[in-house]
Length: 413
Ligand code: 5CA
Ligand code: ZN
Image 1 (cartoon, rainbow, N blue to C red):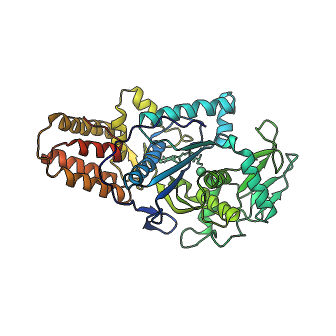
Image 2 (cartoon, rainbow, N blue to C red):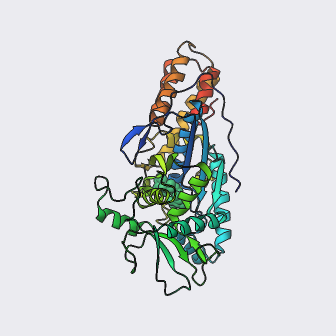
Image 3 (cartoon, rainbow, N blue to C red):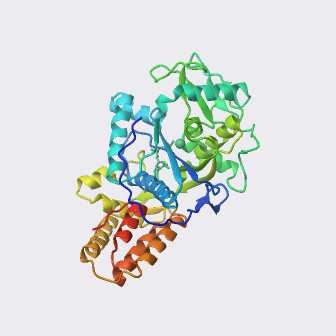
């Protein structure tokens, strides 16, 4: 599927350090490329049933920053992203609004593309719709069934059977329920909250996730190697990441609401399919709140990128407001954030227009920016480095302006 238009990224002389990022699975900072020349990134894409909100924007911006830092370090970056264009929340919203689910998905994907373009987010090389991969996903489910990692659960309201993943058949590269990270009670609660069905009768373990949903009346379905139906959620990301990038990938990314069950189960599926870890590192962004609650399509407390742009916001200011927070923190958006970023940007623009100051320390600022971004994407530190240069009378050399553009995606002046 078509992604979106790539922003231009200036070439900056020299190179930055290799980025280190915080890996959720070990709790440690790591170089997820293991020193190789190639970095493979998979970021979980949107479920296209409502407009891009600031939480989505912040998440994709964090991985955009990682991509920029990798490129600046001289690495070849390969990036894949899915879009969950068939799933319960999308079907429910389409039914509620009396629209065809395909039209709803197409219109929301389109809007997402436009928002990503406005924010100058680097597009994935492979932007993959789940509906285009149903056959491949079904083949993977069939393999899991043949190899004993998947089983059928009686499904009275369908002619076929729903298929589930057996979480208690861990392979050498995956085992669920490392109690040091999450206890079983928490896992059960999160599973119920985030698309799982721990109370479904007939499962071997309440935590077992759905791999394949047999066709129901009025629901979309496809004929496949495992009968007529549609894919479960976690398996789509394991299959798309493996097919497009090869396992293990460097980074599996998404918001912290995907740590469990989504990324845990995707890793379990990958291990059962390929006897490989899914990723060298699992990187998670914090949740952005608005009016005291996590911004969410289902809660409806949306601040959308489109809404801000329609109100006249400079897309660079939206970007700068988001970059002023640490990607891994949970934080709350206040309307004043945009005003403050707009003021900061005006100061930066005037600095470039001014042309005065001493050029000798511009190189230090370039190095500082590179170091901050490579240190677990410390964008607030990078923003502070620019502020210091602006306030301290450093001249805005072309190279300095270019490095701000290359790493922070903001063209000043
Ligand atoms: N389609 C699945 C992933 S395969 C999905 O989670 N879609 S989503 O539309 O619900 O979310 C898209 C991305 O935005 C996910 O990485 C999610 O973790 C992130 N996200 C959602 N809400 C927020 C928020 N309030 N703050 C930060 N990130 C968020
Ligand atoms: Zn995903």
